[in-house]
Length: 331
Image (cartoon, rainbow, N blue to C red; front, side):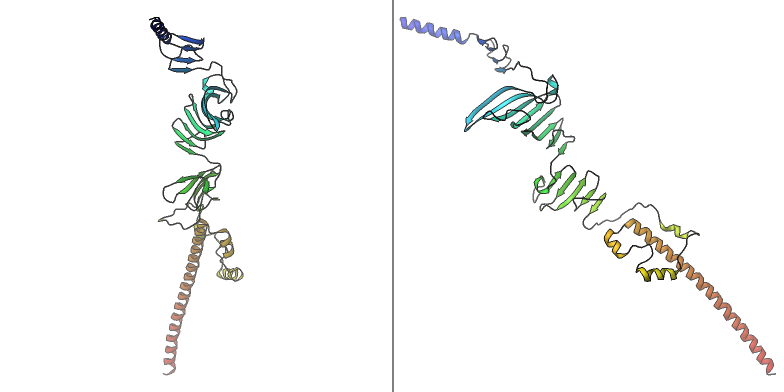
């Protein structure tokens, strides 16, 4: 009977203790009224509340470890959560929550060497993922950045190399590559040949990686229409003060140079290429000069025709006079 009484007392004591509030010290409390455990706080608002009362430093990259969960599997791997100062300051606007991995007590400096981290900025509406000091992906105010922590568009891609074979793939079957580097945007096909280039200078290349003009095309252009802005035209040839070269002078020039005056030579055309705008203006000038030569030739032919007509009339008159004279002589 005595043993039974002692057992009942012990059970009642355990029951009484299990519902009692206990405190390890003033900051570590189990609250019987709420069932919450607080670490670093005597007023836990959740089943487990952890609070670090030490202030975060005000210098960039100052950090404060909030929690650490880990285990040993050949190495001691920890998932740590820090507060880290992203910019100089003393309030939450320059602080971020940094969730990263450390191994064997190393890789313990947020934004420097932690592994596969996830970081959140409550003020700037920013979330970033990366490892060590490298940021791989960022979501900022609805913009997605790959390789940049400050995406300025819905999709902002930044890579450190313009090497086509080591950049972003696009398409499903036989994918090509897209790269955005420090000099521009580059696109290649599935064998690495250049397809499309836009440099920061504003030059565009099709089939070229280093266009030297606003548009450089390595291939054939097929178009229904092409409109070219001009800086002038050849109509000044028709002005009265224009000096038209005599054909004899043109012939002498051709004999010496084997090309028309003002027209580039074959060697020059092969070396520098064909300027369509200038060449069309030059060709029109030559057509207009030819027109003037033909007009002058036609004028001379008409003059010659009139001379021939006058001579014919004179001969006819002389023939009549000779006929009359012959008749008089035969009377």
